[in-house]
Length: 142
Image 1: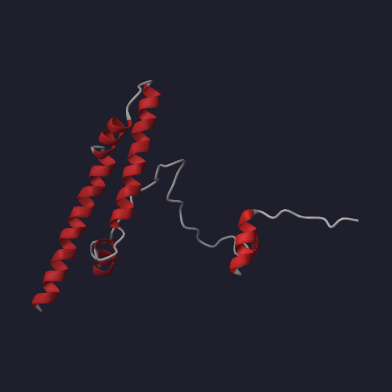
Image 2 (image 1 turned 90 degrees about the vertical axis):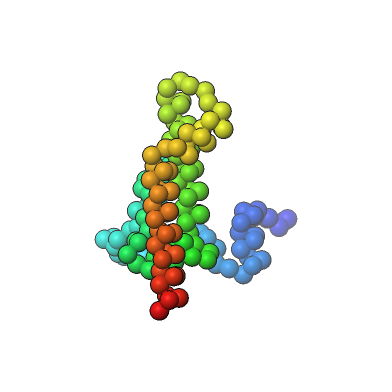
């Protein structure tokens, strides 16, 4: 009788070669932990639907550490800016589809860059960057 060959998912083969725990096993462990603690706080999802963020990420400008994390070296501001811009593009695209308009990608990008959501985020980031620079100047002159 011939040996039976069970085809594994390519991900499973990679996990085996790398010697890491399989994702399926980790998800099963997570399910057990979630079942044990059903009332544990869960972080709200950043995305609501495809490509649209539910809320703008906010930097706590009163906290110097938060300002540094956002605007300092290797800060998160550019990552969040791109996420907000992508969300604004999706909103502009959805509005155009709802209105029955056909817009080019360049026009959608232009509409996204002047949307209230994106401009509010850009102004928030500009204020955060200004405060971070002021903190740096203050720490140098002390």
